Image (cartoon, rainbow, N blue to C red; front, side, top):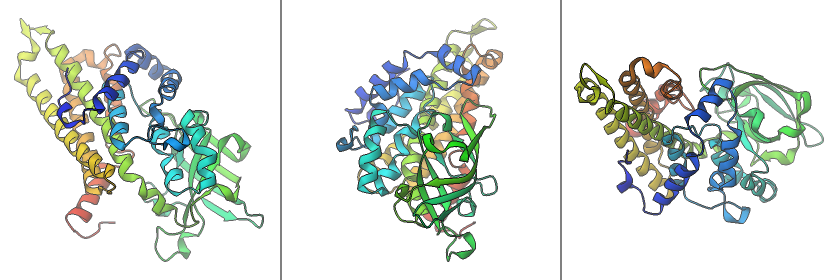
Length: 391
């Protein structure tokens, strides 16, 4: 099925989309089904993305990257999910490095970014969330204490840290000033770049079983020593650094939801146009047509908002409203498309054969991670409507 939003793409993005789709064609539904069944990391797929230079497009050319705008990155991630695959195992390699790029010093950039661009080092993990804090990041308790020798001793725990076992480097958010000692609750947080090849027994990772094949773990951190030179930016300003990349993350993640939504609609339309029940194609029934048409329309609206956010971001703006709205609309449209596809396939949608049940499980995740839709709504209410803060 043709993409409905090609007219919204800059012409140079069309070859990007086609090239990524061509790469993805080498990894069919059987490949993804096998990875899902075995809870296996799609190593071959991620390697192919790295070899093609697709995960380094946002890194400046002076560090070996493609130095491309966010529009290219959004196109890549949409195409991966549009093919029936999933970009989640690899997408952090694309944008997590942004904190190093935006806030790291010259030595950190020279030391790490070229190897991240080439794929020799993988920065896929970002340890932020804690069990007792959730989305209230200011309440994290993981503590980083400055030692006399200039190193930091870190103790605490993290939960839902993804891709830990397939990362060489990990970004870690910790408190350098206790919560009780700061004037504002988001002060006192710092970001560290942790070399996972050197942590030894100071970090213990326990896999968390989830309903999707999304490698994630709980971390227990005990007396982890991190060199002072691995502090990103200034101490106590880590929350500001975290916020600086959220709009890009929202845009890229919503592009994945849009890609998945179009995949659901495409698969359902194809099936409905061939499946016969009661002597006619089920696609002739409005009970099948209308949910798919509605999902298609909603996806197109979400995509238009996404491109609005992309253009603003690439112009140097921070489109908080557009990015959060795009994420909200895309996740809801993707979930509606998933349900419409499941209804279209009926019992066959529950089987592994068609891939619907796998992508259906993935579609639910986008409404709660990496930010819940309620937080996106709160952002819109507070910042666009000027309503009182609810938290």
